Image 1 (cartoon, rainbow, N blue to C red):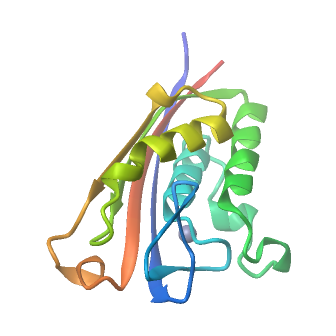
Image 2: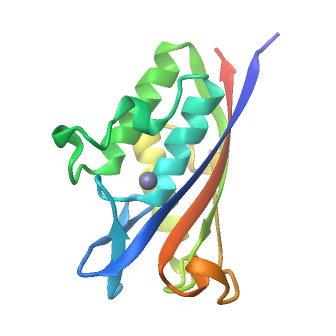
Length: 160
Ligand SMILES: [Zn+2]
């Protein structure tokens, strides 16, 4: 019998003027960008955390410390690629991931197909296994005030 494991991820990054806005592996054109030690790609970070959690391999900060200068400004796609290697080394393959981005502006929906293509390429899994959803928070809270972006992800992995 296959062994299935699930994991979840949650992350938040501040949005500030003068920063690039990387989300789902692509750069969005926006007057604000996400602040972080890496490129601050909140969607990739929650995917990494969900996968690591499913495999019981701690979290993204444990493997890629925000105190470590080698990860300063790093492309989060590199981190996701390494996480996939860890998952596969532990004997797992990805069943599917389902994620939600919480962002007031700009609209994420038009970019979702490009994000899916990008992430499928990095993770070496079919696009049909990657779900990305987007919501605003109806102008409420830090997301609604355009002070930050958050994301959630669940991942299902199975022992090969
Ligand atoms: Zn993060």
